[in-house]
Image (cartoon, rainbow, N blue to C red; front, top):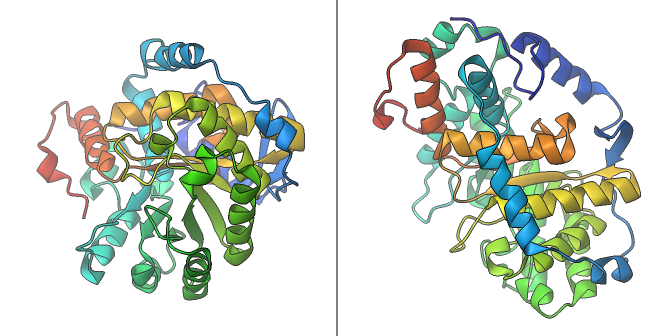
Length: 353
């Protein structure tokens, strides 16, 4: 049963062609395009307090717009399969538990290399796509274990840092933690901001903190976790997003996954609008990661639709979009099996590792 649709909304090209287009885009100098304008990777800009202070958010309008994403958009049959495959390629498989072990990390890495059961890959006729996840996200202690397990796969290793998840340890300790993970070989560093800087409107302090983390990251990509569930208002989310991008964030990320409220579509809408405004003003592209509370295949399509409609096709790849949602992979596999066989399977048939 061959899949014949492209994961990008609105295209009816073959999936193989879509993968080739993605490889070509990776090789180009521009990181993304927005409204026909080529965008470069984010280098950061000096803090513009006027810009930050003038940000306003109409909460009711944001909530209405977010609701349309789940009521207007439906994706069925081959289109749905293509979108779900794209979601897998944008996924950061994560294990951040107190009982993590080297063996658990190796099993997660094996799942990242082969996220879909091989019998389903054959039934869907997608062998040539070589579907893999984008990254494996672990604590610093397991960076080297993950690197060895993923060698030659092209999958990135991301390390959570800076006193994850609270981000309240002394600044010098957090910076040292970043440097240690970079020295260990991590390709990406997920840093946590001091939320109190946002509550107090201390934008210069927040900017300086993130810029210090960025310098410690060196060539590793930095994802800035805002902890949006703790920020209380959408205006705080928008302002923190803008400051993080000015300070040089490669990605802005919703949550640690440990907050009471994690990734929601209204928050995602505010953050993607901030990314769009920043790109329009600076000519630089910043990625977006939704993390926490995303558990179903349907939700993955909702987030992809948000990225497509707010930022365009350039943000439908792992270079600029990630889903931190390990538990979601089992549900995606169940949907793929239903498409291939017409039967739903039990979730235990699709273990995460």
